Length: 234
Image (cartoon, rainbow, N blue to C red; front, side, top):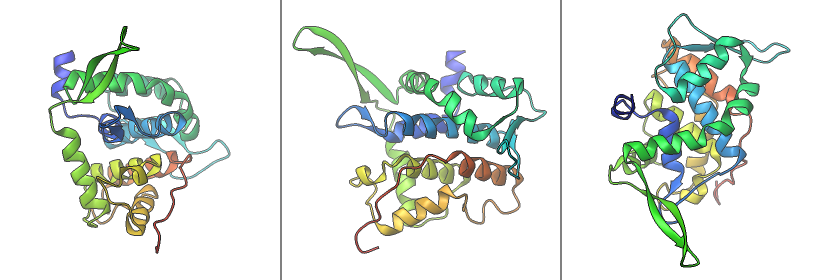
């Protein structure tokens, strides 16, 4: 099962956490609730893109309900647990994000380590207490993702559906200003990130029901968004 999972395409949650990983410090940006929320939203968006869940288009007193579709459960454990939770009881998107988010960080990191995108390096605290730190692996995956985000957010290129979803999640995490060396921060980057957060994904979404549903899922689950500072002069 591990070989099958690690040879499959990375999930949106994996790509998100990898982008938020800061190689110089070995830490993950937006730790705590912001990270939990964007990871949960990434899983829900992935399930929507796969056609396995859908979200109500209208808001009721109980919020916008998320429900499973007629398609079978996903085989990926990172997605299957959330799908099974929704299958048991359709739930509003806000509640799902709060419920599933805290449990996603550790398995997502483990998946990245299994793929070689991240590695654990042995360390010693105070010279004798064994520990470990995360370092970037040699796959080049993170550099590829950052380059695609730079094209979308800095150059204004029209994103693919997955690029739009990833860029929106990174924007919502509040980490873009801290990533200035890789993705130069500006008023235009702020504006483009916010537009993607609101589901404005361009012509690629038009006429694509699944992509439109994913955009709706993404914008609905981004209810906890860090207030990003606009760049000077914007």
